[in-house]
Length: 447
Image (cartoon, rainbow, N blue to C red):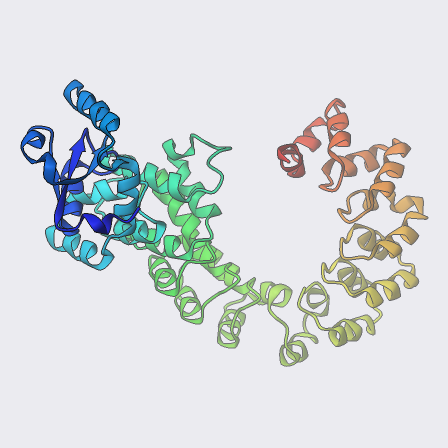
């Protein structure tokens, strides 16, 4: 429907708007130079009316007139929801945002934020203008309305979790599951965030801050703001980020909290300057275990901590080979536990036939299936194999058939164990508590 043909003319409105308030509806129609005629003056001006708008909540007089107009079929009749959808799609966003900024009309802004016809991009821009008045997401009726609209709009799994928009943790779930970078940025810049960083917040606000701190889309300015707060838990999360930013790292290195520095020392993206600073501060073991090992770093750390270095997941093939060439029991066992173990190194360790090393290989999910099958031939390794999430379903079935208590306990804790077998283990008093701690139980059940 092209409503531009109504320009410089009037339409008869019967009933009320649906998505817009009456005030906003009239304002939007005026912006398109379309006048509104009501039933009160329709008898005098009906001849000049270009169309009839069928609104909601018609009174008896309006209903009678509408039925008459349908019967006469002399002018177009348009439903209000169709017209409102068109109005929403023809808004001048720049003009609207400027008007709201200048007028500071909270009621009008609230109306737009709770209007489902606004597109997501406009909603996010409007949310930036909303003032929560120093209160929480659900602390006032207005805030609750906006928060509910926010969750309903952006939460992807609303059908399966249809009440989440009404509970406080729905905001946290929204952040955790969202991949919308613009939304995350806007939520991280809401006025309540710096206030909570400065003065502390309630349980919900603390959970929101934690969710934002670890979200991959949190931008650098907000990361810096979080880092400067010196909030122990938040700074620890920032220090653990896979995309650790250099400027953020510099602030966190000055933290008074050991947990923050330990998290930095365990981050593979730690810079050279950060590594030198933390080495001098006594965090050498964490660094050796986790830092991204360059050739220069390997050369520096190898003489002092070869066993710890053998556990580092960033070793190159040459580094693995150099450590293997040491032919030392403790280094071999550490290599066998490395979750990035290379197949050639695993085969070499297998051939050395060291019992403790073989157990480590049997538990390591990085070991290829073909080598696991060779390890399976040695029964004393079955309990270790039963804990490996990379073992085949056939191997699990064979291990189950043994009825060995150590093997069964390992299978009960193994995320690779089939759901049917986990259910069976739930009936065994010896295994029930182990199964209930298996994180795969709920995941597989939900599927």
